[in-house]
Every structure is written in C-alpha cells, then in structure tokens.
Image 1: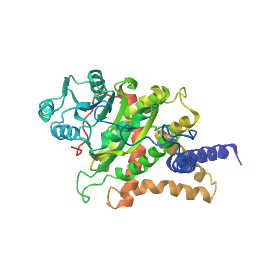
Image 2 (image 1 turned 120 degrees about the vertical axis):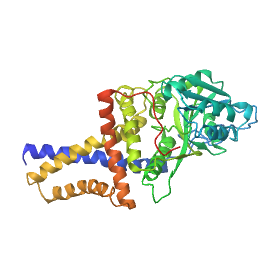
Image 3 (image 1 turned 180 degrees about the vertical axis):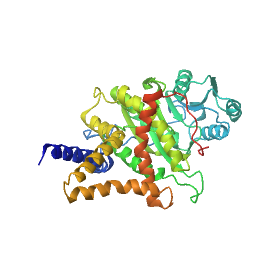
Image 4 (image 1 turned 180 degrees about the horizontal axis):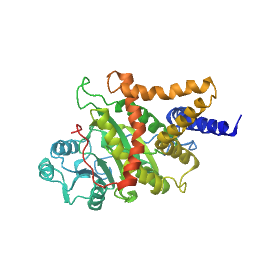
Length: 405
C-alpha cells in the first residue's frame, strides 16, 4: 500500500469515527453510563454513603412555607416585543410561586415600540429602558437591579408552566448547584401542512443527552427560554457570547454543577421553516465560535476528566462535524479515483446520499427528506457562522426569528 493511500485512509476513517462518535456513539455511551450508575441518596438520608451524582431535585425546598422559599428575580430581556410582552408578564405573575418572593423584571434593549408601556401595564415590578446593547448587556443590567437570591431568565415568547419556577428553583436545594435549566417544548407556529422545520426531532434527542449529562455530571449547554443561577454565581460574559453555551461550563469551572430539570417546562414557538431555522442557527453559530475559540471552552482548567470528555464529545466535535465531513468526503473521492476498492465506492455513495436527500427535501415535502434537509442545513450552519464571525465580527444585538411571535 502506498503512503498516499495509507494517509487518505487514515484521514477518512478517523473523520468518520469522530462523526459517528459525536452524532451517535456519545449518546449510547451516556445512556449506558447513566443506566449503570447507582442512585445517590437524598440529602440528609441516614445510614448510607453518597454513591454518586443524582438528578437535580425537581421541586421546592423541603419544609417550605411562603416565607422560607428563596426570593427570585425573573428577568425578561426584550427588544421590540410589544406583541407578546404583556402575555409573558401575565404568565410570570401567574406562576405557582409566592408573589411576595417573586420580582418580575423586563429590561428593554433599545425598544422602539410599546414594549415598556405594555410590560408596566401588565404588572411587571421593574421595567428598565436601555440603549441598544444586546441581550447579554440587558440581562447584566437587570441582574444588577435584581433583589432575588436566585436570578431566573426567560425569552419574551416563552410561556412557563405554572409549576415551572418552583421546580427550577428546587434544583438549588443542592448546595453544589450553581446553574439550572428547564425543558423547552417547541410548538409549530403554523399548521403542519405549511411548516417544514424539523427542530422538534433534533431537540428531543438533545434533551435526552442533556438529562443524562446532568445525571452523570453537569450539562454542557442550556437554553434561553428557561434557566436560572444563584445571584452570587452569575457570571458577566462578553456581550457577544450567549448564556446558553457559556454559563454552564464557566460555572462548572468555578466548582459548581450545571443541571437540567426536565419537569420545569416552558413552551415556545419554533421557526416555521427549515430555511428560517438555518438562518437562526447560522446567527447562533456566529456567537458560538467566539466562546469555543477564545471564551475558555477549550481550556481543560477547572474540568473534571469526565466533564472534559463531555465537552469534547458534545460540543467541540459537534461543531467540528462539517469540517470532519469535508475531510472524509475529500479523502473518499480521492480513494475512489485511485482505485482503492469497492468499499470506498459504497462509502462514497453513503456520504452523498444525505446531501442528495437534503436537496430533494426542498422539492418533495415528506418527513424523511425534510429531516435530511434539516440535518444538512444544521451541518452547514457552523461553517457559515464561523465565516460571518471571522469576516465582520458578531453583533451583540439580535432580532427575533420570523414566525416565532
């Protein structure tokens, strides 16, 4: 075998193995590990040694009364959200949580509409009107004015279930928990005949991974619709770096856990079309790459070995998938060209198949082809997000995705 062929085969098989690991193998490994892990005792349970991690407590503090539950500031950062902000504030005030222990803050990020007035009319405790600085800057300003021991965050278009806050706050009964996120259920903004986005299928898999990461150690990312931190563990990050990805691992580096509470549920409209979802993911990836490359994610300092492997498997390799795919495809084409054997003709066909199916998904709207199209667009978005960031930087400000309000 020639050195050229050997090098091509190494590139091909290593790339394929890494893709298979991050897309499928990692999930299987988490399921196996979570399945064999012995459940740990509840805090204060007599006569047993602590056996390991357990899922975050999904409820309020023990022996609670209205005046012993922790105070909470629920923060909603909003830019031109007059269409939904009143419903959001009313949803927050209707939560099953002692009203005197809850502060609802709406922070308006350069709003040019009636967001502030409608938030006040709906009963928000504090409305901040700020110049346009981006979501993170708006949240930072709200945290400075927050009176709660816990600061919780939500999107303006996310509606929480009545018990969601109580369940989310219950995670902080554990003294080593510094961050907790809940579960988002995406609902179609349009009827099924017109909507094409397949985010729901992806999100269900992502939530299963998150539940197992939380059970074993800590989550590697959260979501913006429903999450909370202790006020004294809140971290101010670069305004272009979103909380969803940066807060969990940074809080882990400071010695606390970042957990997932699936029973703390919120609902949010998804982007109706795959193309609209692609634009949203491209924008998100332009915020993600700064976190990965200069935000501290790649530094193992502060990680346990297990959490470092989680970050590598679920985040770094996941975002690197399009580059791994390009390397494997280029090696595969070259191996076929030099006559390396039938095996590589078969693997080339298998690599091209999802791309072809994704292309057909734009013409024939059947679910398997739409899922393939969603997957292809999801794989391309990190490349274009990186291009956007390197070419002209990432703005701190944001616009609501079309069709989600």
